[in-house]
Length: 264
Image (cartoon, rainbow, N blue to C red; front, side, top):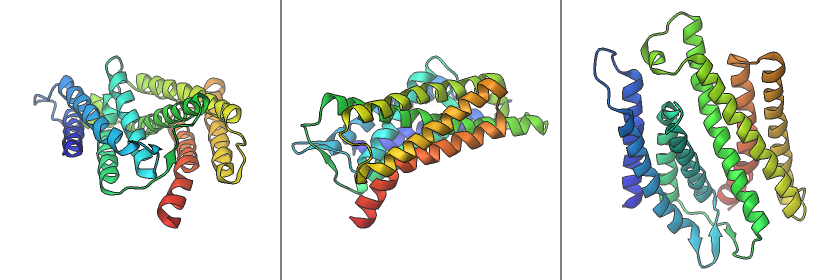
């Protein structure tokens, strides 16, 4: 029942943001604070079934749907906290429904992949930093899509509709590259901690994850360099951001889906 209320809160928060974006300027829109309040209610309720599904006497269950739900919770929490000081709440129009779907999948389907309670502090740090990096790059990807839509409408001289409700283009670009910059630092720390605390990052069950993570790191590094050196923006920033995001998601979820859902 708690999971259901969390889903409803997320969907309500996303709906309020959608109403604010697509409203008729002549009509009153629901307050921004309502969307944030519903989001915080959702993320609080989400934590309860997430904890119940993940924590057990056998250790931490990081099955694919638990991991998906945990990342969705982390993304949503980061988004809400960031929205208190920055105009990024519009990302909720995509993030909130995704988080609701993650809760449903985690409640409906159970997969098992236990991390025993004997894992080291270093390995725990590696996992947490990796989760934060994935979460930030997810937010950056949604931001990049929204920025590309905004840029397209402005170039076509159609600044009406929901574009009018977005922050200025320069602000949107700065927010995007702030997310990518922080995510790049976190991904760097995740790779370094992996090499430091895992016995062999290129073992058979980790090799593809390591290689893909390094490729994603190179992609985001090239994007940041291109932004600094050549002023990359718009469509080019979108392509590089989404490429790095897809590679990074394949690194983590690719093997889990194959091993736990297909082979399992």
